Length: 209
Length: 209
DNA sequence: CGCAAAAAGTGGTCTGACCAGTTAGCTATT
DNA sequence: AATAGCTAACTGGTCAGACCACTTTTTGCG
Image (cartoon, rainbow over all chains, first blue to last red; front, side, top):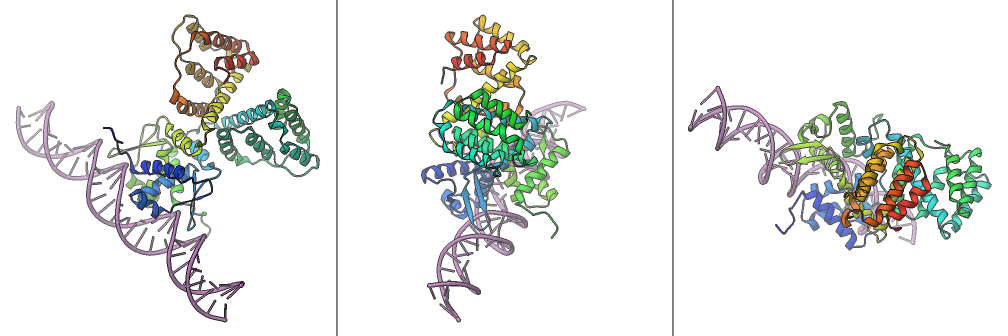
């Protein structure tokens, strides 16, 4: 038995699909071959191809548009959190855990930015600070998203996006005036590299939940 | 047409499947209705049912046995990590991100334990400390696992387990003698509630990666 | 050249069939 | 009566084809 055990077809399709994406340098947003083309290319039936595609769609890795085609997802997977949470995290504590895990990723991003001179010098922080000063409308999640992006850990960003999508059930409104001061301190602290102050401002901003 | 937006069928099946599991109190390890029964019960075709089941199987939430039936999975989703990582983390930086994200969860667990008098008084720490003193064999991941468990965030634990499984490719050997001192300091610092010292010992222990 | 109609392409769903394992019930033998 | 073995029913795995709904491309008319 030196060959593959020849498992389930749709799993092989998933595997070959990944190889196809790698080999053909398919980028997020690009179009994938149609289901019927994949049938022929992978020498299987459309059912198996669809089972694989639907699985990847539920994972948020691809996006299918009726009549349009199938595309490699650029940002992914709010589906994943919903499904996973509804199956795994049925306990009462789940909501709390999601929130805590999200905060963990946000705080870590802030720590990384504070500790890196280059990161905390990014123009985005000045831009955000200016927006706050001008009393422009701004969403709190937008700032945190920038932080997580800037931190540079793509896996963490992926996880955060999913957690954020999940916690959007009780969607946050825009930043209130009273929160702006804490937010400004957060940004300034980040720019100065003051980790403790930044974390403290973050806690203040998020309402010490 | 006052009815629902009528999304994709297989997503509706996933949803109704979840409701079925909740309503009928189906526990992990229990058998699910057969595909043909689900067709009739959910008033749809077997294709759509299969697309939903295959998706949940790829997520590691159910397990299908050829000729046997479909069962609710008892432990979840190491499949998930493989699939997600092979699709999302194709870049060179991916390994690094997995490691960093894993460390994030570990450090946060340590912080939580340090900050909670009750948690850091758990007998498990004395037990681990004793094992180290006695030069007994112990795996580094075993200690970290206890920390993440003790921290009490089940979602974080879930994520950590998956990241750990992924990074097991280059599996860690047992704790070396030189690392034991740092490990002892880590545990003692946790018990005393010294967050900074604990994190520092952790960094020392993990080799300042 | 512009635009609308037609055609081709694509995903979404359903039906029916057959194969390949597993399970369970029922003989037939001891 | 108990049990071993075999058959029939059940279940997941795969395939083929058809039709619908929607999008994109092509075509042809003004």
